[in-house]
Amino acid sequence: MARVDPHSHFDDAQPRSRHWRLRLRADFARKVLAGTVELELDGEGGTLDLDAKGQTIRAVSSGGAAVPFALGPDEPVLGRRLRLELPRGARSVTVAYETAPDAAGLQWLAPEQTAGKRRPFLFSQCQAIHARGVVPCQDSAAARVTYEAEIEVPEGLTAVMSAGPAGDAASAGGGRVFKFRMPQPIPSYLLALAIGELESRELSPRSRVWAEPPVIAAAAAEFAEIESMLAAAEALFGPYDWERFDMLVLPPSFPYGGMENPRMTFLTPTLLAGDRSLVDVVAHELAHSWTGNLVTNATAEHFWLNEGFTVWAERRILKALRGEGAAALAWAIGQKALDDELARFKDKPELTRLRLHLDGVDPDDAFSSIPYEKGARFLTVLERLAGDAAWDRFVKNYMKRFRFKSITTEEFRAFVEETLPGLLAAADAGAWLDRPGLPPGAPRFVSPRLDALAALAARWGDGRIPEPAPLKALAPAELLIFLQKLPPPTAAQCAALDAALDLTARGNYEILNQWLCLAVAAGHPPALARARRLLAEVGRMKFVRPLYQALARTPEGRALAREVFAAAAPTYHALTRRAAEAALAAAP
Image (cartoon, rainbow, N blue to C red):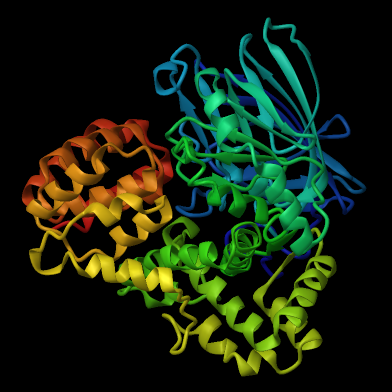
């Protein structure tokens, strides 16, 4: 029997679940979800292996009769195999269970960790293989399901999910039950749930934003232009198939910039810069509605199909909305992220390939910007060789062919060869997909503005302090690129830059984090104090990991980093905590 996914226990000979019915109660006192999941199957009985991690399994039944089950040993990456022996003819099975308080896919927040400070909060993060800690299931992108759910929450709290709302009512226990339906088949990692004190604001006939009451006005203002993004994306990639594009701004411990859960994208509050300068992340999550949610990588080994395509698509949206110059700046910012990650994995070059082989490797340990940025550059090579018109036709045909399907790199290659024969050979696709690093001749994105920013940064080399006036006219993306290209500054240069631009007080977290990484290494005292506050308040991995790395470059910074981590670690999401621990472990 062949395993479908190296990170899942089920195999090709077994039935697959095609629909879930969840009935769960959120117990904030115990930090567990408790209830049942009914799995509708496309087979009729026999052995069924599910993925489970940390749950207590109370009972299993089918048609009202008990079903024998056994939990296998706890494996470090995969969790436990839940083996069910279904009766002949069984077309569904119900598992009664409760989650573990420390489930990696769930973060339970105390009221003081929220913006409102009044009520607790829960959010899920199931990518890449954490759905198994929330629901006993076939936790693989290869197994797509529709679902419906009933979520009981305490009075005063609201539940939202990656699904359409289907009503709510008072519960017998004094709380409230929220109902949801997801009619389109999704991979398990796109199951998403959040519960908290939430309000919403309409942004367009098919989009609204949710957030805590103190945040909702800022969120609505920041994302007010979402409909123009939707229209631009549809013109490029075809019809939007998910009916609504709603967004949820989470508390600051959310570990990512955004998560593309269909119908309810999750976003970090660090995007709320006040000037819409960071809404590119929303363009990225919106693009996932086609590249990732509609056409999905079959397993984490093909993650580039999701993220490389989405970065490419995001920058096509930006180009359509803001022009070639804005897209070139985005590519330049991405190049810095790619270079940093290639350096981080210099001792694990196998993780810099696009087509990964992850048997025995936790996908979270392989996570980086490489599938995003290297993958997007590979697709740009194909685009340039094919020509704009031919490539645009290919992309739309690709979406149609694999709509609501999960595919492999090999299937992608076969489709390219079928529709654009010879293109892969011309692009030397093997060098991109199967070899480490960035191939020679990888595309670079240039513009006169980028050249001017590089020249401006070079003027600060060798400890010089030129006139800072030109920097005051830079747009946020331009200032970020300037900081990325700046030679390592001295303490005196940091003081001059901070005095001119007030960088340590910036509300744009991309600029702030890039600045702090430079300034703490130079020993700029205000930056050290601000780094302490940021690491205590924000759990986004993109900012936490490099800031701990920057602090670790000096003895004073290392002491500060370890002190801050000891206090902040309990408030971090499990993924962020792991990233921070790795950064500190690598310190001298």
